[in-house]
Length: 354
Image (cartoon, rainbow, N blue to C red; front, side, top):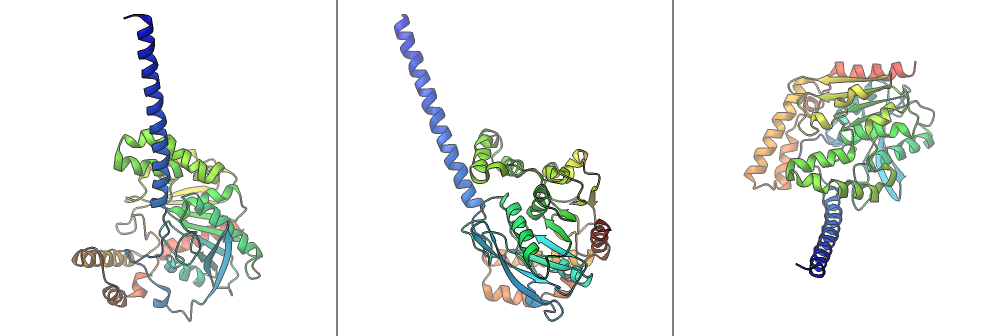
């Protein structure tokens, strides 16, 4: 084979390789953008899991004021409970599929314990504005906006502020510590790295393809969030010496141990950060560690009933059937909190301001 022909073959191979890399890269960028679009699509319904609506509790005892504030260009809607209380303000950062009513059980207990509570719908969910939920890191920005609102509100502006977050909200409560000064934070069932969590979740579905797509997943996060592309929760906890309590359920199947904040206990340098493992049979999953054993068991039974209804109805339960189901829920039993857990949370907050 002469040199001229060899050069032509090599040039053709190089051109093909370059074209392949360009096509693959472009396809991966498009795939990542589409993935974000569907994964973080706007959410307006919570019908597929058991929750207790505000209308089911004693609304006379637990009055609330509707509030709103800006997060970026979107107006977020929420509620302020227990405005007459003086122990401080607890801001509840919601999970990825939660609304302002998702933590009514704790809200009632916190109000009973003398706290004012702010709960809100995140960007792109329920009553708040936003065409989508944008991404995991948006939770941090929404929480910072809620903290800014509290600093300006006539009722809450002079109160000590405490953060209480679950799942995505736990990440937000930790990550926000790099940019705000609060008294303490409680982080329940939270993950550490947004990109790492998305990668770990994808790897469970597509295996090694997640490894190939990882750079493009990170790139998409960078395009959307810039410097917040992969802000770690642990870095927020370690930013100062704000008291932080990290709780994790031993049976959590939503946030695997290796992706959790709890798994990074050895990296914590904040002397006021503590980790706790929840091992109760019905409270050790991703949800409901704040409920009593009986309430958590009851919720599990309700979820089984709801799953059976969904299966019997072919996956789509009619609203009339759902209304009948929820009308039969014992709201008082389902929202009974674990006294020891709530006491621990309140003690943690009280110690932080002494």
